[in-house]
Length: 81
Image (cartoon, one colour):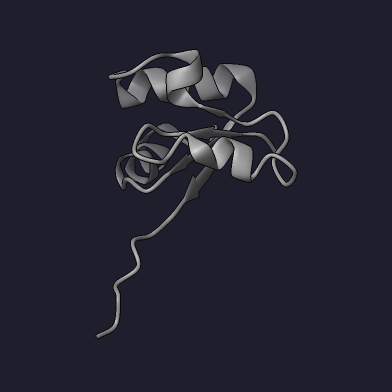
């Protein structure tokens, strides 16, 4: 599976996870900054990427628009004192 990392995630993840997810890219590499969720969704769908994001927006879009593309969502983790 190749991932399209949303702009809310570090671009360094592409390199860090390259062996596990070859062919992955950061959204800024392919679309630039400030693209709408709809543009990111369409690019991922058209090019066979699963979206990696920590935003809830893509999960909500998946409920409304149907399952493609795949979605890998990282839920925020609360630190314990």
